Image 1 (tube, rainbow, N blue to C red):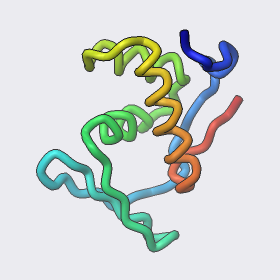
Image 2: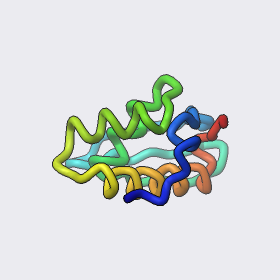
Image 3: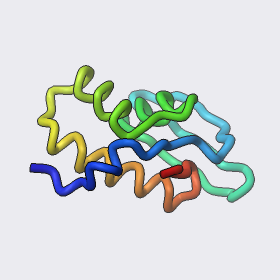
Image 4: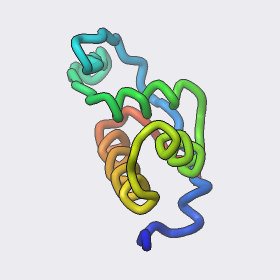
Length: 97
């Protein structure tokens, strides 16, 4: 059972950074010119970043990832929460409750 707050399923995430992006092999390499930081996204992080071209709820993101990857609901929720938290800490996205 996921320890995710049920209310958090309705949290909306949106991009807050404008990145310069390049696809290299199976990764997205992105530069945030405002922060002067470079980021490397694996395939799942790239999928999430691209899905966030429009604001999405946590539940929407999780549903799309579950359709695309062979992963349990709990593992998906936990991994997605960790990824979104990392993206928020890097000031790439914001959460609107």
